Amino acid sequence: MRALTLSTIVTPASAIPEGYNAGALINIQKTGAPTDVVPQDPHALLRELEAINMTLSPETWQAKFVKDDEAPRPYAEASEKDKATNLGWKPQWQNWAAARQATKKGQPVANAISKSTLASLKGHQSNFAQKAVDRLITMAKQQIGDDEQITKDLAETTADKVSEALTAAVYGSVVAKQKWTEAGSYPTGSTTIDACDNDGTIEGKQPLVYILLCLAAEKGSATDSSKPLAHQQTPLGWDTIGGAVHTQLTTVLKYCGVPSKGPITATGIRNALDNLRNSIQIHGGTGYLGFHKASTCTGSSEQGICVQYKTKIKDSTNDFETITYVAEMKRAAEMLDRRAAALQKRIDQQKALSAAVVQAYSLGHEIQALGQLAHQSTLPKTFQEKTIQVTENKKECETIKKATECKEQQPKCEWKNKDANEGPHCKLNETHEAQKATQTSGTGATGCARHGTDRKACESDKTGDKQNCAWRKGKDNEDDKENEKCRNGSFLATKKFALSMVSAAFVALLF
Image (tube, rainbow, N blue to C red; front, side, top):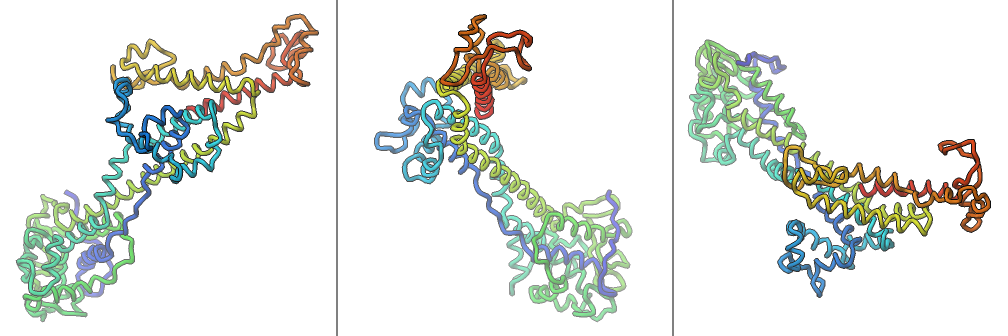
């Protein structure tokens, strides 16, 4: 059992310190739960990415999701061929249809796209950008993966729910609060000291307000010489409490001091609980909170102004955590922790998806810049061929549903789930595709070797006034450095470098 010892606390002379520890918990309830912070839903950013993706897609694809009057086409009205051959479309159809609607003229996302360089992309460039955005969408969905749990956490930890737990800690329940604070109604047993000798239990609960009465009120008419909580300022006896609990409770609650301006924290709640727990002492095998000289809490200096935890806390039992005000305060603290964690996850989602949207809009600039690095007659074909090939390879891998068949397609495909033999786990080997794209860049431009020993033909190989080939010795990283032969000229060397840069950029954007 955890040791229970009296904590050190600075209080007015001759007053019972435990009441101030209880008052600290009551002040937490007075301060109240923090105002709810409502983070932006990351799905709005995901929808924007999907609208960008739809804009860059072929017209034939976009047409699947609208009727002739531009109204959204439901999945039920999709072509029978599409439904039969693309079983995975159904869960995504509604989002795709919404993305198509977002691209209509006048829509906010459509306006943003029209003002960006994405609107100027055509043909292979548009196809290239669409594949890159598709990749961003995949990453965005992975980032949002546990959003259902985050949404649940935020819904179950609102300020109202935290306040409900704090109210239950102080009064026993939200309903019981009315009995404690309104005239003409009071909880059964709250007008006598009897429950102070029985765990402070009132109507099956152990509310903090009754604990405070046990530590603040004297026996009878308050003429005893004992010094309960704030006795020197306002003597209070159980005879006075009588049937006017709400009036006397207002007086007692003032003993708790001035509440903090907040915000309350989970750490603050737990620290206050620790202080109160450490104030409980074991006497005669039973736990007591407050002043005690005998085995009962009668409100007298000859016996005790206290709470006797007759069943909850003994030398062989520590059920402190099950006391109502303890359990409810801990529940409030757990909700605060849970909400803080959920909010941080939402913030991380927001940052990641915002960055993805910015990257999507910047694709137009990047693709146009890449276009200036390579020769106009070669670049479009290079982009188109690589984009189409990667797309076909990706589709081919994803149609495979068995691990054995996927492994047969290595290194093009790879099985992503080592614990499963079947399922949608066969994916394109992106590392292999990246290496292949880099290795094949520029291979069509290195044709100077075809001139062999014909120096004249070599030196005549030009593009305008640019020297494609040159008769010279080798440079660093070239073979046969000491011998003169037909090698790439400055134009082809620059072109080869540009194409390798394009390939690297292609891989970076697509993967």
